[in-house]
Length: 469
Ligand code: GLN
Image 1 (cartoon, helix red, strand yellow):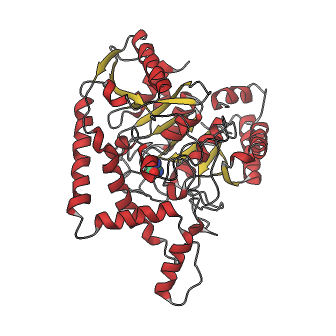
Image 2 (tube, rainbow, N blue to C red):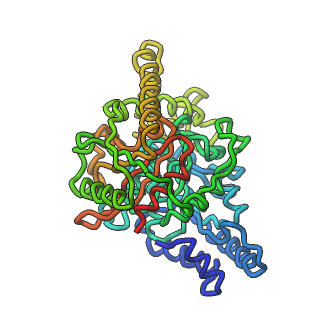
């Protein structure tokens, strides 16, 4: 992995240049094509942006992220590059404008290197639902990188860029970050603009960051946060100040909430060992460890899959063969919609749309959708109560390390259960950060997760610095 903070000081003292770094990233993408991390690489655009960054360094005009090499998940608009959401449905589609996050990164001097592979429309936990083939885990190519932002996780873990953007609706940043050994931050809902992100489940979706260090995570966070009038759910607050917070001393005594043993008993032993070691690390740094009973764990996954599929069925209605991308052979207009959806969407997307329309249908609305909304309130209230007593909640990011390609495809419910520890943060809208912490016996990375109260994103990064080796 490469870090921007180190590169920036090397650029400043003349040891390297933005052009050199960008070229090295492009080479790495080529050499590691078998990982299938990218769907589009903009070598010319990146090279030109890097040259401009070098001029700015030379003129003493370097901006906060000058020369930072960024990869962008392929459900986020980058003007001039294709956008597919890893679906046939968007064949030939090119967005006309940059997402707000991309615009802010460019204005801060970043070099956008390309678009990363993902699960189709961000639905999945293994990157196997991509219409353009699975992404492979760099540590062991017979294993998945996690999903849905698998390409972004691999791009950072394998040194193809400094940082990558992903989207996290139920864990799609944190779970692949854990499987690939990077940091993965899902910010508080509303802190990062969703303008220019293709919606999956709008009340859960949040753009976030993959990086090799906390410093790089914080630097990008400070640039992409802050109010955006183009997103009605954007928080009116100012941009983040994570770089300041991670450099400042901790409030004492720090209180870390941990889950009771029963809540983690389904995890692989290597993950439990890492979790216990990390808890010890917190303790030696003076933190008080407090066991908390959050409750409602058994309804996290069902609540998520009802809400997410309901919203997805509504959001994906716009892909009808008229407005975007693919239009299949057809006889008349209603046949056009059916034929285009049939040809354009893969099996997982169809499954979600059908489930979503079912839970919203008039006979079942009260039994499923309304109940899930009530469950959402219970889950949020439980979090709010816990955050009165602790500064952060600490738990594994995933019950297992990266599993094998194909292993969980036969049974969608097994796949959905890999999101056990991640979906509740989206349900409650709270920030959550996956921190790389050691490896299992086969060398596969382990990720541990910190969750915090609404708007405590910076604090989470500060607490995570205690685990940084
Ligand atoms: N894996 C979860 C799902 O399949 C989460 C996806 C996401 O966060 N985009 O829905």
